[in-house]
Amino acid sequence: MRGVSQSALAKSVGYTPSYVSKVESGQQRPSVSFAEEADRVLRAGGAIRRSFAELEARGRHDAATSHNHKPEPPHGVAQPTSIVVEHEDAELFYDGQAYRATQRRKLYNASSDPIARYLIRISVDRHPGSPERSNQLYRENPLTWDEMGLTASIGGESIGWRVQHDRDAFKEVWLLFENEYGRYPLYPGETAWLEYSYTVSDEKWGTWFQRAIRLPTNHLSVRLDFPASLDPVAWGTETTMTAEAFPFRTAIQRDDSGDRRVFSWSTDEPPLHARYRLEWKFRARPNTEETGSDMTPASASQKMQSIGIVQEGDPILTRAARPFSLPEEAEDARRVIAELASAADRADSIHVFSKGMGVAAPQIGIDRSAAIVRTPDGEAITLLNPRIIEESAQMDEQYEGCWSFFDVRGMVPRPLSISVEHQDIDGERRITIFEHGVARLVAHEIDHLEGILYRKRMRPGVEPIPVAEYRGTGQGWQYRSDNANRAK
Image (cartoon, rainbow, N blue to C red; front, side):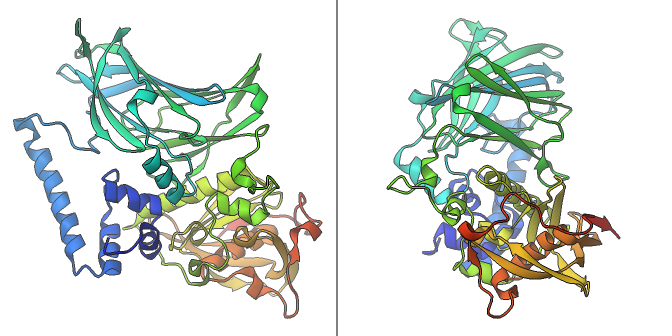
């Protein structure tokens, strides 16, 4: 792209490098706001906007003429809406070296025509917090069909498949309801179990497993089956078209049976386009990404950097973030909030946040005005285009930490109460009052969106102390009353 790296372009347009990479490779259909920003940043004189318009027009033309011919559907085409998934059951089995994913879907044909194929997608990302590392990994060692050992069946009959897209870390395949002995179409009004499995080594599979709802689905169940000796822990995040990312509404169940530890979770009537992401870590296995070459523990800041947190010195941390135009950019806002939630989950896996936590979009390399806060009580707060409009006269001074320079803690004065104007995803403006510890968390993240690090808030002559000297780890901030917040 005109000599501009994916990372540099991503920062300039407010998207992650992985999004830019997927757009370039054809895995991701660009949004109109991305096309406009890319055209502006690259000074393309409208060429990118015109290309986007042509792409949209071509998509509409293809849809309008598809009944006249039967080419292979382009990437991104959804399954026919006439298919209903009565039950999707997904299992991920790990033997200590490789993952075996098995998907079982009970399909119902609600159309008036037989269905003879089904589209599946296989995507891997070893380093979700570091797209540059993932891209390099798969360029040098791409995912291959031989190692995956894909198998599929419908109604108990083995079936064949045909490749639609074959990229280093992404595969798209049509499962064909036929084999050398016959054809097994799903006729109108019939149901059948479709099952497929594939294997990926842990060198290429990241510690996450996501289920995307692309068809009407009645029930979804997921299991993670791990060796108990690795002492695994798991958590999950949900993202939908109408809500920001948030933890699963119901708890993941754990079952210790013999030498295996199984995590299971299910939900009924998941909304279309919802994404359910399960993540985990193995507490009994040293994380080589968190140690140096001499096998000594990495610093706290290095750990944060290893999960994709931008570190002090990056210019994105010292400039005001671009606001969203809502509701026009609601899709982009949801995407950024989902990225923030994933970053928070990764951070939660390497550190205990007794005081609560927060992360702002610039800290994950996205130049947009969005942040999330998770309180010690588990409340999730989403901030879009926030600004503090009123502060209490009463102040207090307590230690804070920042993921972008996490090796130190600084004594920072903050108001005990703040009033914040912010927007919902639909553009409606709200004013929320935050108090005490939650006010401190929220003010810290709004500072990030204004290009301010807490060092600038400290009293003259006061410097942060090394984290080794800090004695507040594992304890909450102390106040006479701990009311969290109230809406106005």
